[in-house]
Image (tube, rainbow, N blue to C red; front, side):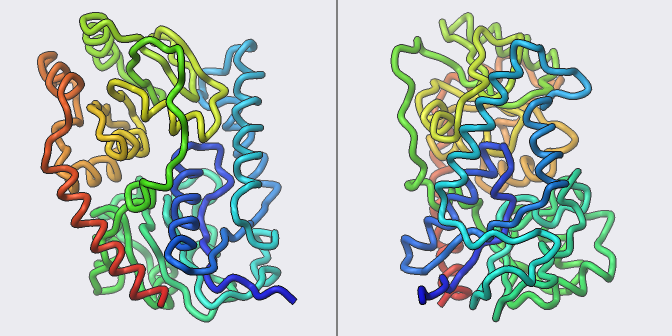
Length: 356
């Protein structure tokens, strides 16, 4: 009989989201590159699938997708499902019945917002806190509480479950404070897998495109789009939105798959985003970028940019227009790769300690 892989990764691997896909792929492939037999735990839930697919087709609610866009969002979803099915997956099992999973020596929970109790369909599911997992040991890698603010604390039920983890690492300071306050110990701060294993990210830059500025996200405020459009016109750049419709952009590439996204971000002159992994992929490719914060993502984006020394790439309504020319028209700060390299070594050491 075949020998089960020693390590399994538990994350949101079936989300129709570029960041979720790439962080899952990078972590499992990074572990395999380091010589570990590793798979993604392939959990399934009809409830979660319905919610995920509904969001994939209507990502801009309460504004409904235009009828002409529905086939494009459906095409994007099909490309994701094909890409996900090609990843190294465990035997499938029901999310609500983890007893059905094959046993593993180690389960790594994370990355992504696996501990976000506010997540609209995964939030508060006990399996992401280790309950019912068939594992000799449970640890986390780059786990996050997302928009659950540290000031609210973590109640005893969830803190008790985290005490059963052999080691804990997180990817943002907000999550670190939640764990510290709940458990009285300091978790390790590590890199998101896309930054830790950036050399594994594949994707060819699009051909036959004029120089462009990548637009990734939605809910962009008017003050932000006005400044970005003036900058793009001044520099002769096309504004191309990937994955979502943004009518203020010059063109839309809604049905792009995960590999398309990686190549698109690598080929951009600069990146404008409201998303965490928009910032991450700009950092991966050492591209100029500007990010407008939203309530849902402010904690993790603020912490990421603070950690790597890229805080000036966050802009607000009070940001002078001249700053857009600085942060979108110039190469990122030289100190950023140095800080990332330090965090890579720290993350390597953590993985060595927990996996060997």
